[in-house]
Length: 230
Length: 230
Image 1 (cartoon, each protein chain N blue to C red):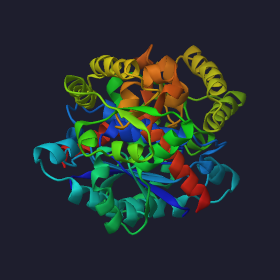
Image 2 (image 1 turned 30 degrees about the vertical axis):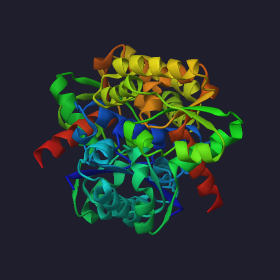
Image 3 (image 1 turned 180 degrees about the vertical axis):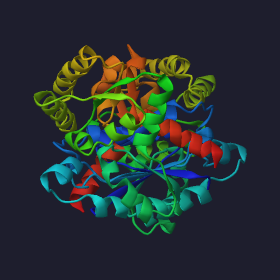
C-alpha cells in the first residue's frame, strides 16, 4: 500500500467532502489508479471546537486523538486535520501521533507569503481569531491582519453555524457582507480560515479566485507535495 | 464511538465523493454532530474490476480485502462497497469480513420492486452485465431487463472510462445516447448500475428523477436505515 494520507474530518462533514473533492480536482489523472490514496474519518460527534475554547464546553482532544489512531491503524502515513479551529490542539495531537502531520495554518501562510500581498483579511471562527491562530504568524512575517470586529465577527460566526445547519443561502448572504467589509478596509487577499468558508462563498470564488486564499486548498496542495516526495 | 459505517471506495474516487456527499444530503442535520459517522477508504490502486473479470487482468480481491480490514481496524461496524462491478467478489469479501456488509445490488433492486415498474433498463460496466449481477435477480422477480447491445454497450463502457480520465462532457454525450436508446426500447426506469453513471448523468437526473434508480443513492439509504436500527 502506497503512502496513504489520512484526513481527520467530520468538522463538519461538508468541509471534509470539499477537501476530498479538491484532492481529485488537483490531481491530473487518466485513470482511478493515478489518484492520491486517502483514508478519511468523518465521525462528526467530536465536541464543537469553538465552544470548547471560548465557552468551557467539552474538549474535542480525546475524540480527535482517537480518530487519528484509527487512521493510523487503517494505514495512514500522514495526517491532515480538516478544520482550522481544531489546530488549537495541533501540537498535542502531533505529539501523540506516530506518523507525519501537516498544518493547515502553515500551508496557508506559506502560500500567502508567495502572493507578495501585505494586507490580509481573515474570515474564521471566533475561536480561531481569539487564539490568534493566523494573526501571530502573519504579523511575524511583517504582514497586516484585518479581522471583522464586534457585530461583524458575530455575523461571520452566525454564517458558519447557518451553513452547518443546512441554511446555505442565508449563510452566503451574511458572509458576503463581511467579505465586502474586509475589502472596503483594504484587504488585498482574504484567508478563508475556516473549512466551511470556501463552501459558503463557492459561487463567488470562481469569479475572482486570486482574491481568496482557501485554507483547505492550501493544505491539499501541501499534502500532494508530501505524497510526491515520500 | 457510534456505529461507524466504512466505505470501501477509490473505484473511482469521484464516485466515492458522490457516496459521501449523498450521506450528507440524505441526513437532515442541524449541526455537525447529527451526521452519520463514516470512515472512507479511497486508495485507488485497486486493480481494474472489469479488466480482471473479462480480460484476465490482476484480481482486485486481495487489495479490497486489505482495505476492508483497515476500515475494521479504524472502527467500522458496517461496510459498503462503492463500486457495482466489485460486487462480483461480494460473497468472498463478506466471508472474510468481521462486521456487517450491505449489498449495492440488493439495495437497488429492493427500491426497483417498490416502484412497480416492470421494464428495467441497466447502464453498467461490461463486466457487471456479463456476470448478470442485476439481470438474474431482476428476472427472478419477473421483471424484464433491457441492456445496451453490441456497439451500444461499447459506448457505455467508453463513457465510463472517459469520465474516469476527466473527459466529463464527452462521457455525458455518449451516455445520453444510450439512455435515450433504452427509453426508445421501452425502459420505464433505468438502473444507474455503475457508481460513475450518476455523476456522468447528474445534469439530466434532476430534471426527471423518477426515470432513474441510482445504485449509490439506494445503498446510502440502506446504510442510513442500518445506522438507525443498530
